[in-house]
Length: 96
Image (cartoon, rainbow, N blue to C red):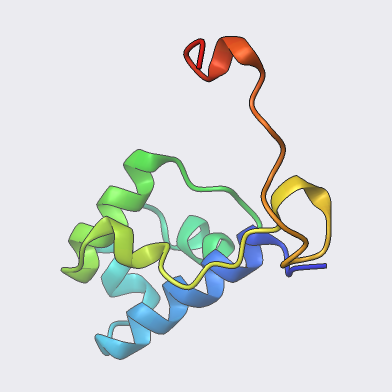
């Protein structure tokens, strides 16, 4: 099973922060958030909102999408690489 998405995100966030030679205090200040919250994000304790990801990206001077590149998503609850995710119900596919 793939590593929890929150843990993966936290590791990527930490890598980006360290690549910019920023401390948690510096990034928290740039992203307008508390240091303990940033620390919890890096340890995979929370799911960040889209707004938080945008604030982090601004603080890191990267694109928000860069915070997601490399995440391995376990689709359909199976093992990674088991094939496509579940089929959308008719009403979610726009009547296709």
